[in-house]
Image 1 (cartoon, rainbow, N blue to C red):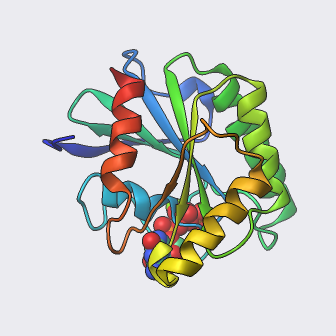
Image 2 (cartoon, rainbow, N blue to C red):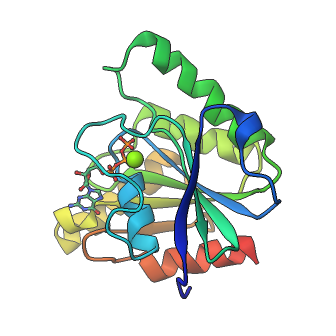
Length: 194
Ligand code: GTP
Ligand code: MG
């Protein structure tokens, strides 16, 4: 994908406020601090378009980024971060679930996990939920730069087994640092939005 333009359009805490216009959308989902915003920046060749942080739970709204004036990448709030106030924690589930289940423009979900660790129970739950709702999904195991090549390949199998991926389910080894996996991920996204 040749990136001509990438712009932040809006942050949304209420489904009614998602952008109009009917352009296709691809969402990025994963637990807090896993690297969703970094992956988005890597995809669009921008250092700081989506805000990244060492503080988990930074992204608390649905954030819409318009790419090439043609489709949106949607950065979702991270799940699974225990140290946010209870009130906020319960607020996130319905927003994400509502968006994933009731947004006609949504063409596919990039589910991001950390290659270094086995997927969490919530990762498994999200993946099963996506399958159950017949939403196209690609699993991206990120932070590959933190492992050796052989460790990385071993962990890829752990991710595959823990999430219960079958042979045809796409799984991409990725790093926002080295940009490994970027072209492969773009091919999947292009297949969804075309
Ligand atoms: P929330 O919005 O809080 O849910 O976090 P997020 O999932 O958007 O994560 P973010 O992109 O902010 O990254 C969290 C931390 O992981 C940051 O310190 C990033 O620099 C680091 N990080 C993200 N991707 C990679 C990667 O591929 N390699 C390495 N080494 N670090 C990464
Ligand atoms: Mg983020």
